[in-house]
Structures are given as C-alpha cells and as structure tokens.
Image (cartoon, rainbow over all chains, first blue to last red):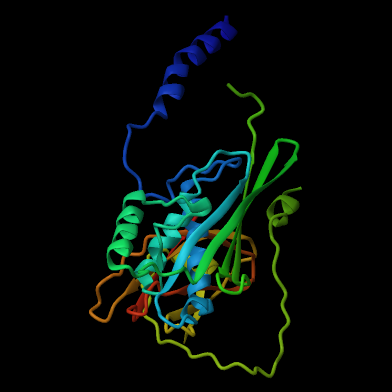
Length: 198
Length: 127
C-alpha cells in the first residue's frame, strides 16, 4: 500500500520535473556564457576564440607591417577541415578578415581565390573591364596568403569524452613562398556522455 | 573519510624563477570595481603592465593569483576604447574561458584591435 502511494506521488511529479525545466525561447549574447557547449563539435564561441587568438597574435607579430605599400593585401587560400563535423571555414576566416581590415593593417582581395575562382565574380568582371579599357593592370598582387587546417583529436575514458580542436593558420609571403607567421590555437572540451541516450 | 573528501580537491602550484630579472615591466596604474569578493580571492589581479607591438598596437598583460588551494574556472573579456573614450567594436572579442590552479600565478594578455585604442577594461566572471 505504502509502495503504491509513493509510486503515485512519483508519477504525479514527473510532469513538473520534465516540464519545469522548459525555458521560453530567448536571445543570448553570441559566444557568451550562456552559449551551449558540446564536446564533439565546434561551437560558435570556439570559432570566435580561435579567430580572436589568431588576429591578436598576427597583429602583435608585426608581419603585416613589413610590406612596402601598407596596408598589406591578403588572399585566402585553403583551410582544410579535418574534423568529423561539416563546417563552413568562413566562420573562422571571415572574423579574421574583418578584424584585420578594421585594424588598418590588411585588406583581403575578393577577386582572387583558390583555383582562380573569385569570391565576388562581379567585382572581378568590372576589374577586368577597367583593365581592358585603361590598358593598364590595376590589380594589386596579394602580399600574403592565409592557409590553415582545423584538426579534431578525440579521447574517451569510460563515460568521459574529450575533444581537442586545433586551429592552425599560416601566413605565407606570396613572393618568397615562406611562412612569415604561423599560429595555432587549441581548444579542449571534456564532458560526460549520458549512459542512457535518446 | 571526511578528511579525504575535504582535502581531496586541494592542489597548489609551486614555482621557481630567476631572481635577477632582465626585463623591466612597464606597470599601469589601475582602477578596480569589485562586485564579487569571492572571485577576488580566487582570481586576484596582482598587476597590469603594457607594451607596444612593432605595429604600434597596445598590448596589455595582467598577472593573476589564486589565493585559494583549488582550481578555479573563470572567463575574461577585453574591451578597448579610443582617444575619445568611445568603445571600439571588435568582431572577435569573446569572453575567454580560462582556469587557474590553486596558489598559481599566471598571466593573461590582450592586443588592441587597432592602433587607435588607447584605453582598456577587462571583465572577469566566475564560471
């Protein structure tokens, strides 16, 4: 009898336990403390942190200041995704580009891309038209290219899961082909995997 | 058993360094606003020094000390201001998660996003 009463009370409490935690949809600060953290994927705060680290490191190195006609011109090369997650690498590179442009230290070309593909085909067309009309080459050759790789390393021990995401970037002098700056930011996340999943 | 439970998480960092320093830190007079006195004991600001990068950007370094005997997780965020005191929006200025071991002294640093940055503020929050 006593057992039945306890079971009835538990059954009655289930809707409160399940429903009580539901939160109304609301806005949070992008990359802020309330952001969701998942172990096996790159979260937006990870991209922001990696981009911030790369930008600060690159600006502090002074590598961009060594061009004859500042600001330096940058072309974005290949960013290899070696993680188990499908990601748009612009989430990393765009933040770096914006920060470098705002710093006044570098500008990025949108008419020269990997394999000859322009990020902005219309700008490339207009540029070619201007060059044809004026019979002069107005395109500025990039001083540097930015390339990199994102790597995921996974470790598991019992119910604990760990992922390290390595954001590796290289700035190469387009004239010499030598890397004049290289940066690496590693972000490690650890968490317990639920023993029973849905 | 209780003794183990209480002292089990306490770890503290021992350090050694050269006594005769070659480098001279350019210390910055600071102004603090403390609203979390508990965090102050775990992530205490020992001092702030600054330097200029080769490209003319302000670089700030802050020395932190954990007076407690256990690891503390916290986040910090740099804010930058121009000569008019206006905040400079930086697309990549995140709240950076970090941790400090018990008794550890560590440095965090930030580089101004533009040469126009003259002042800074750093926010700390317990995680």
